[in-house]
Image (cartoon, rainbow, N blue to C red; front, side, top):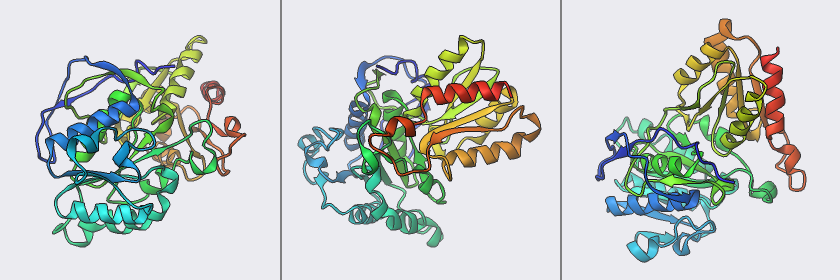
Length: 353
């Protein structure tokens, strides 16, 4: 299965060493590659265009468990691409210090499930570095990459979606791509942004998602959602791998005459409230879907914000199709996941409310 058609609306940037790159409209060319190869391209470009950039983490020296860092150490040397001890707190702490010295620290946490030992460093150090110094110091050159979400056989220690924990933290940005083209452009934007970013990569799509990706350097705007499908009856909002599920649901209900508007949030914090609000004001209905457990998931924040902003325009309660409030299961994963059929039922119930 490929995810062609979910990668529209891209912007290109000129190579430079600064924190910001001007974005332009790119030609829609490139070779078909999968998501982990797009990540690899982005890291090659980041290291090539900025001598202050470093990539490090567990096993990244030989390419990493998902091969995202393949070839980096051979090309740029072991001083810029290197392995770390199996200590996520140490990885994050080192990355913060490196970024605070004016470098581009690109740290990999091997699985999002193992990011919790680094939670204190990310939340109490990285996120507050600029604020507590009155903007005299910052670690804005920090990007933490980590694969998240279901993979079909990962069980409760290799399948979690912890994005909501970090969305509660002022001072961080949280970004999740849906496809190879998006992954490359968003990752380069994160690396060059002047704020610390947590970049979650949907590992289900590392090899599954394939589309044409420009080989050159480009960036996509952060905090800007993308309407990837126009509709009039209901607004669907998601991010990461869940966009493919929602896209298939849109196709299915279209056979019944239901027109869905599909939005990829892309950046969760700060999220693009205006785009979602404008869509809901048009359709009068909203469904949010993510893999993380429903209680306290970021879908709850979206639901609350839209209820505040669009209360008089809503034709039905906001629907949330999410993971269950259980630890992530192994053999029962199909029951846990927010599947296409669950989304279909929710769309029909909301439209017919």
